[in-house]
Image (cartoon, rainbow, N blue to C red; front, top):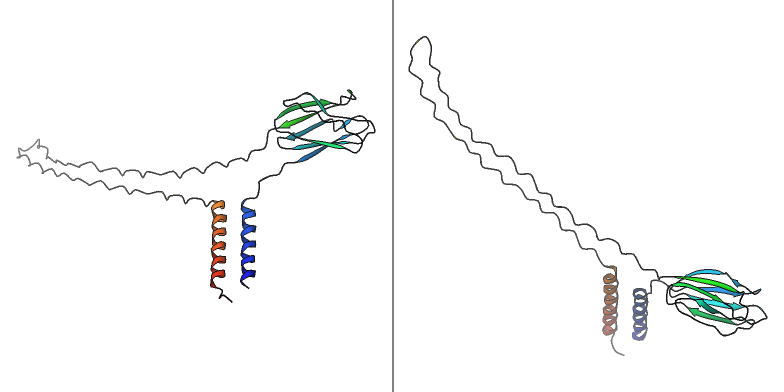
Length: 210
């Protein structure tokens, strides 16, 4: 029973590790036929890392020799049923022909390898500053009675002026909520692998020895 539990834990660990370390993409393989004294297709487009295989179907021998290319290459002479492969490591245009039959000509365009596009980082939240409330200006009143034109009256005493000051309201600051950090899927997978490994070790250690 302990051995079965150990095998199950090891299998789960290997499956999770394979998912975590899986390669993002795989290089492609293209074929060019040598038939009826011609290359087919005569023009081909691949990417860096791709492999091209030439298949020979004619009774007469053929080969592949570059005439202008970033990296020159030359294949051996191929008889009927034989093949030859070449993996491209540098972008550019590769023109080639058959040295036995110079009329056989073709070309291969090699593009740069694809690069994963990075998603732009989210913009941080904008902080809004609340408007400061306007303060009321001190009001002063001074009332004086105008003198009468018909009777001489003592001028009224001016009313005492009162100054009212209103304390400015304190602005309430709003703190923008900090954006929660995004969870990295790689860290999540690593945590699952560690948790499964610890669980397996605990199961094996808890089994009584027989």
